[in-house]
Amino acid sequence: MRPAPFRPSSAHLFVCTNARDLHDPLGAGCGARGRALYDALKRAVTRGGLVSRVWVSRTHCLGVCPQVGAALAVSPTGGLFTEVDAGDADGLVAAVRGA
Ligand code: FES
Image: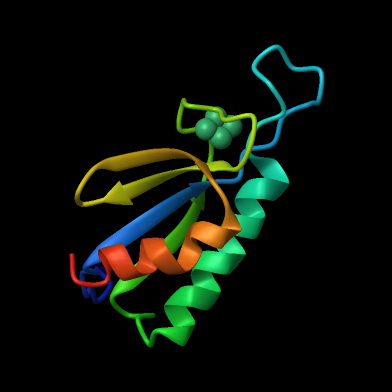
């Protein structure tokens, strides 16, 4: 093991892409809606030339399980959002770009 070079981001967006069975009592999860949001955020970050400053990662359940859209957590500000959809990507990236 050896340490890796680390350049901290100004913001890190965690998108829930957790998928459950349709009949799961907790709901189907963010699943495909989360994946669509993740892809839209990656495109927005790339378009904005922010790849090294705004990171986007997929994650599992964030505990707020929306019926529409997906859940999103923002670090380091600690914001947690639910019912986020791909159409929100540009606005989210604009909001965190200077964080
Ligand atoms: S499945 Fe996405 S927040 Fe729970």
